[in-house]
Amino acid sequence: AMAEVYGEKPKIFTKEWWPYFWLYYKWHTVAIVFVIVLVSTWITDCVRKEKFDLRMTYLGGTYYDIQMWDKAEKMLEKSIKDTDGNGEKNIGMMDLVIAEGNEYGEQNYASYLKHDMTFSEDLSYVYIYDSKELERVLEEGVLAGCYAKVSDWLNTDVSDDKLIYTDNTAYAVSLRDSKILKKAGFDCEELYVLVRTDAPTYENAVITANNLIK
Image 1: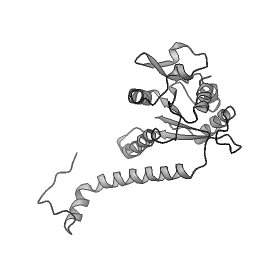
Image 2: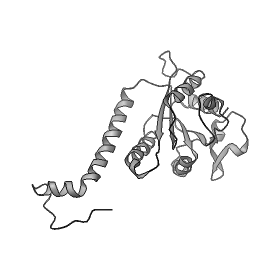
Image 3: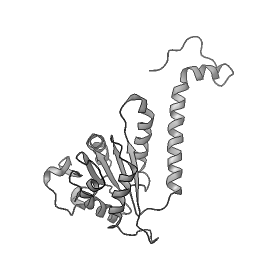
Image 4: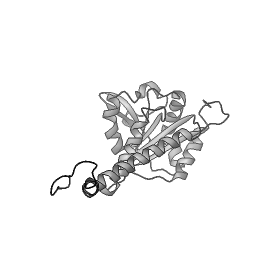
């Protein structure tokens, strides 16, 4: 809620206005600047980082150790193609954790912002969500045409109860029996995989998504 203002409001950008502004809008300003700096730093990092043959994004409420993601990446990298022709096969993972509690509001906002920005850039092609975040993104993402229908990329035998439907079309597959994730130490009962529709590395996305499900 907006702080209650007492007395006459000073003229904008005058000497009297700055203390007034800082008193009533300090935390709004700090929060906005924090998010802008965080996202700008992340974009700069993405530009500078090595090229990847596939990028993946995790969004969920559980923090997984970086070593677990590294283990999973190494197993998944064996099957993908060297799309950038640098003689190496690399998967880049973006791990976005949504924490419980009001004190994590800005951090969570930045994570959602990063997630949504991957669709406007060529940054991510395979998405792993927990059940809570899946519910949140599915409706928006399907309407925006962000995710491919499972029928377009699935070449692994799965039972129908592992498919998540929206408007009678499956867009997500459960990872509860994922051998690769379990081997890397994940509890994957509540994890799901989706593939982005317009992925430049679509072939690697399909290979990886199917290997995750097995």
